[in-house]
Length: 490
Image (cartoon, rainbow, N blue to C red):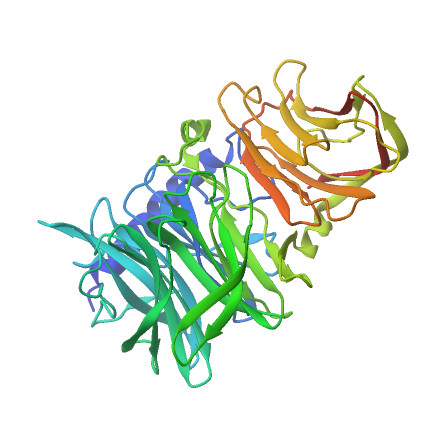
């Protein structure tokens, strides 16, 4: 039996990856414990699911280049979300609705039904009127080899909606129905539409789940909604909103009408390089999310995607985070417990008083590490303090915590001779007596968590191997570090 074009294109991509991956693996900027593809470009995480006793991670993928191109779905599995095994390409462009050099198999999600693993994704094609995005289905009995549904697409944009901005389906089951939301654009304003189905293949439009009236931009990419505690959480990446890359809203979802109303909003991450996260419920009952650790060229702070293209790859994912709800319905985003298995060579100091003279933080590996600091605010009189990370004396990344003005900044203008920009966010400082800071540094990224994991900054930093000194210092006074713990991660 002859192979389909889809099967042929998957085999072609897999052969190309096999020929390139050993060379790419030698790249100096390759991450040590963050997920990356074997070669080529990746962006959004897709299809996150616990299926067949494994964590499954699919991802937007151009195996042929270290820049964005025709999108495939890469695929990997794991027992712990830390160590990943690469599997064959799951989806490749092959049909009239998804086979275009500037389109392909765009983002989507996964769900188990009747013993099979279904993928719902956006097919992107182009005709004489421009790009057309539709929602499509594929399925697999073994969770590895996928067949596209012969009657794709299963959902097309409603009348009056922009067919070039109709994408990123997230599917789940509630009661007797499957539900699906996707981002849409109408009259240059963002909406999330909701559909329902009894079989994942025939869909009924239900309602506009939520929408922007201008305050939240013109398109919501990669929307996701899920129950947490006694409420529902809607999160998305808004386009056309200056500083925000990922927003969450906490409210109530009416399944009868398909309407979501929110009362609380917040930011998942204030960094330059955290976008398009997707969540899933794991086998331990945790709500886990994973985001793309990079940025798009339409973002106001964008310079470029970094120097890794020279090594034949681009893109990684931020650490998996568990979502937890607080009593006031704000959310925490906590790095998963499994990361502790990477710790070695612990070093700890207590009761450190750091003034304006730099205090060097003890680390067995100053490039790839985890750090926890607990600041005693009652014994500190500094107006602010800085963490100088990945420094060689000239190049450095500077995290500033401004206690006087209740602000936090991540400055990478001097970090590597490549990156630029300075993030900023307000600090909640709900605890008036102490402030905890949790940092993960990898070869090409730094993630900073504080305010009980409610205020987070993630940025790519392409620091060299000689940038291994790390310091803390107070400004206009001293900062009292009650406890400082560090680990090398391997």
